[in-house]
Image 1: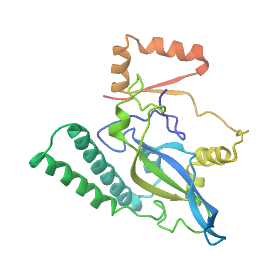
Image 2: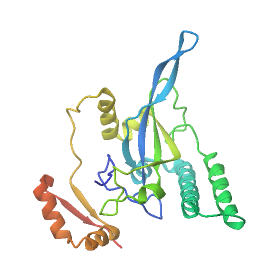
Image 3: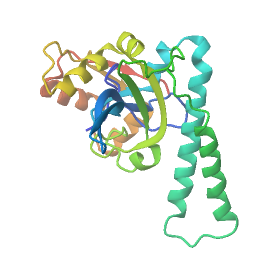
Image 4: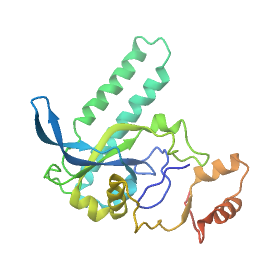
Length: 244
């Protein structure tokens, strides 16, 4: 099954240009009482295991123009991480020495340097996210590992998904304001309760060139796919064909 952005309901898929259809998994960070060996407690932030997917296009679309440079640093780090992962994957199981070993070492060094440029403050306002309220950490999808197990439509598969280590942070107030569907759903996820106000995003099918090619390989047409989705309960489906 394909992974979709929880805000816009569009498939997340690997690409060469950002934002493209690349994205993140967003995790809430909550304050908790931590037991200490001295029989005392300390309040600290812990990251929840619960997450929801959020694409870079949605993040970029809400970001003020004056903050775009900070997101660019995230993109640069993501690209550097992907490059080092690809080289590591290419060299896995091989006897590497000399220039080939240096190639990976250089790529890894560049990634480490890029990661140092990531800020720990909120992407949207630059304020400290550790202000007593929960905050949210968006961790990138590992393009190299997750691309190995794509769905038949060329998108990331939610059942074979790995995250990288490039990240960005969003404060409580801005996440609540800009990404209300994810904010509300994560609240219910952590409570272990069903969201009584849950509404699916509008049923839209975005047909990208890669999506169309994947269908052709499976011997299926767009019309046949739409019929199958309608039979499966998709209802009134809006089809949007992206330009090549």
